Amino acid sequence: MPIYEYESLEPKKGCRMCVRRFEEIQAVNSTPLSVCPGCGRPIRRIISACHSAVMEVSPEYARVADKIAGYEREGMWSHAAELADKHSEHTKDPSLKNRALEDYKKAGYSLDTLEKHSTSKDD
Image (cartoon, rainbow, N blue to C red; front, side):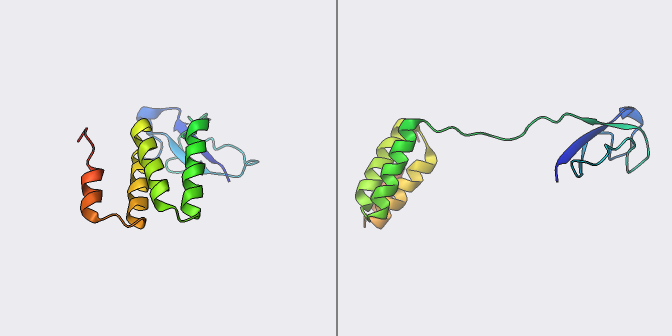
């Protein structure tokens, strides 16, 4: 069921619910509310701003991510770590840096080496 937003037609006179915009879950074919469920004052349904994020990935990033995943599937942890590390430096992607560190651990690198490696020149 979709979530609809409503606001008071008289915002200065509304209750705690309709003084600000509020959300109501309703079926698509439901009649829009005309009065506040809290105080009975007139309200209207509004067009809500879309609060979603669409993350597009560049073809280069997708290619590198696929290559890293391939190395990981093959158990080639060192190769995966090096590629992820190199690409994280280029893209400044902290999640890719963490993936590189995890792959380095799986490849058998010591914790001391990883700690030195994880502190970047920018820190």
